[in-house]
Image (cartoon, rainbow, N blue to C red):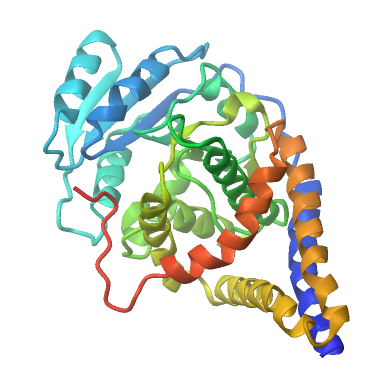
Length: 364
């Protein structure tokens, strides 16, 4: 049993260390373009009246020295979202509202909303965020600076926040978003496209045109941000970057409890079936090793040395995530880590989409 457990632990550690090595290899931002590039900011909203006003207020406070425009695309909302968008656009020149021009064309209605904005955008850079996000004042300037003159896609950090939830739940959400960002940034450091967050994402408009827009991406219910990154990275000739500056971190409204969290994860995980085979194999190996290491305490009741493998895994996870949080200049919570460790394999088992299950990007 000891040799088998050693192989499992080594497999898990190699994947984690590969990601950590990617963080070290993240390309340095080059000099920013001069003059500042023209930006097109895209927000797709569906039934987001509770959050949209706060998001737009945050965007109105952007401190960007160049020209930029905003597209707020309403995706069949039945609440006050369209009214909020129109009222904001009336107060700000360069802000535009529109409906989804591609309803029913793809399984994901959000993809139609994003394509609508992409076809109307005039900016050199496209910046994406969600209606439940609160971009800080330097977000536009920070993402444009990170892109520089050579990068074609820049992913950013987006922590989930739940102000009304318990302190432990908030700490758990932070560690979970740090772990997801570790996979994104580690892959980008190696020049690979694995995953990223559409809550803070920048892409050159001509690159999205070259790959055929959203029509060229897999027709799935989620994962358009991941597939955009993967499509750009697959050519092997484009420079990817991850924004590390705190000014580019975009807080997003997170689930306030377990049920909402599982619904969100089920939506995110639904895209995995269309990932490329090497990415699927990597995820399968990582999660299988993680589950097996969590089983070692049971067998360790008979073979005592096996009791050491799970603590070693948790220490390794904690060390890598702590160093990553330090690189991002984000807080790190030991309590959050200890809550996240057993919940991570559990929620992947619970949230993994069931065969034939219908998942919407927004539940009414």
